[in-house]
Length: 357
Image (cartoon, rainbow, N blue to C red; front, side, top):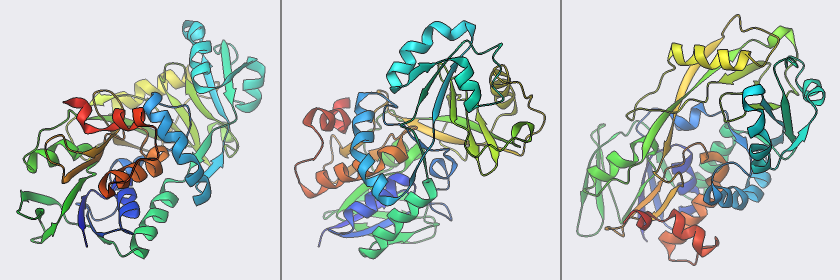
């Protein structure tokens, strides 16, 4: 039976394991002590079908039915806000999301702390959802285990070598693993993993994005508040277990790392957010940051390497990893198993590593 080693235990790796393990022997290696430690464990995930470029949106749409079946989507309204400086940009951005413009008074009814003296225009969309990231990862992990996959943590990859029959991977834990094919699902470390395997990197760049968790503003019940986005993605906010999350929405390029929030970035982002609200930010409960790793064209990279057909990429998820996961995993399995992809040919080509040749 064909065997596969998957490097990376975030959403990309677990999705790959769930889709490949019914068809072959699968061993997944995660360097941290838990799955989803980096980007996947720090996502304030939403499912917005019209989020991302056209290629990403095709994956969103193809993933939707599976996410609904897994029970990880919960409806939450989406609210887009613009002040006087950004008012002219709102209609175009709202149309890109499929949102409709509404009176500011209606937006204030949805979000009572909205400042009508600052907010000049607003739009709303009902077709938006909270995405249970932990629930989806557990769903995929159980699928992979039920199909016989071996999922290992604390196995940071130190060395990769091509053998006559496949690949040999050595980890810092002193273990060695061999398989016929290698799947690079290493997130921010995708390019370094490729280089370790003697292959050319694709230019996948990690970007830091921070988050602040605030007490419920003004003592309000935030449970049914919308996901709120400033035009131009200058900040966003959403409810979180009785509290309120606010992100500066920054994209600062950084090396692959265990990311942390920069106090100045948090302060600047909270200032942009507070400009739209009547309730000031007086206290933070916690802050953190994660990495969103993008290929140069902002589409995912799924398929065999340009030079090495036994090395597969499942990387470049950026900020879309969870909402594209199921279609991405299906496409990866189609490539590995030699099946005709279910996705349209132009989408498959736009995701293939060969596009960087």
